[in-house]
Image 1 (cartoon, one colour):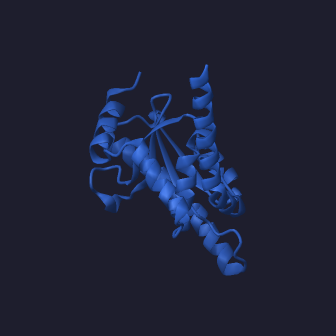
Image 2 (cartoon, helix red, strand yellow; image 1 turned 120 degrees about the horizontal axis):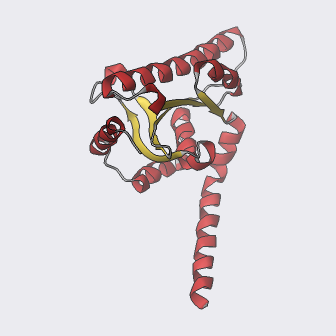
Image 3 (cartoon, one colour; image 1 turned 30 degrees about the vertical axis):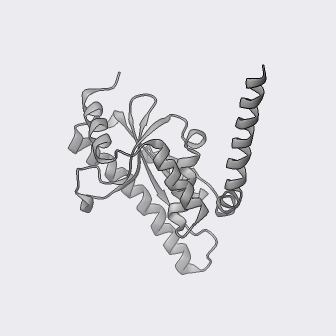
Length: 196
């Protein structure tokens, strides 16, 4: 049973982000075809593989929107999902360049790691305060290109997942092929089903 506060929030989300899941999927598939932003590519990977990465995420409610009406100065959350348990699930993404070397790059990586955790924890608090949603009905996660973030989530109750930059690039190159082969399989299954 979803609490009234969560229901109110879900209704609000549908009002400010009325696009269907199919429309959002087309947007992200377009990102894969024309990658011009690494962060957006990482977000496309997450959205198009959400069932595998976070299987309890059932419906995307918001993408790149503020938790508090139109107050974008209070921060935008990358992804807000309704979970299959009736909770709100917040996900912050961060493309972290793990291939760059040198002391400056190590500092930059560490800054990005800290920032992404700080963002999602702050957003969880703001969602709870503004929407009067209990903290145990709000879960949060971080998704990056850096496996080093895994241990950081344990002590702060943040789920951490990552994909390497190499795997992300490989997926982008092969995504069209995967979609085409799935569509072909579906068409063949339908045709075979129609012959019975």
